[in-house]
Length: 109
Image (cartoon, rainbow, N blue to C red; front, side):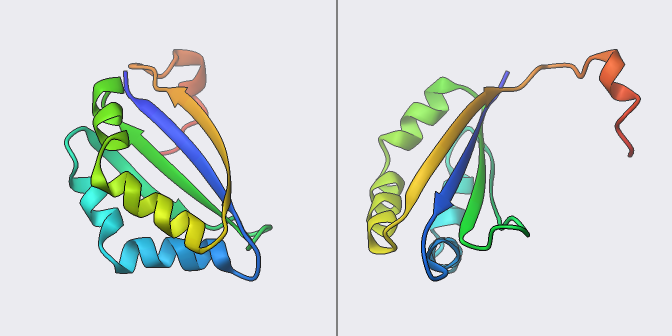
C-alpha cells in the first residue's frame, strides 16, 4: 500500500506556476523522483484556477516519506515556497492494492 499526497499550492500573480517551473528547471523535482521509495512527483494546473498548482506525490511507504521529509530536498522546497509566498492545502491517501470489481467497469484503458 503506497501513500499518495495531493498538495495544492495557492499563490498570486502566477507565483504557484513560477514555483513549479523553478522546481522542474532547477532539477529539484527530478532529484525527488530519484529518492528511494518515490513513485510519483508530478505538477498540474487546474484549468479553472490558474493561481493554483496541484502536486501529486506518491511514496512506497511511510519510511520512504519520512526519509524525504528529513532530506535536503525539503529544505529547498521550503525555501522556494517562501520565495513565492505560497499557501498549501494537503490531502493524504493510501492506495488500495486492488481496484474493487464494482469500480472496474468505469475504467477505460
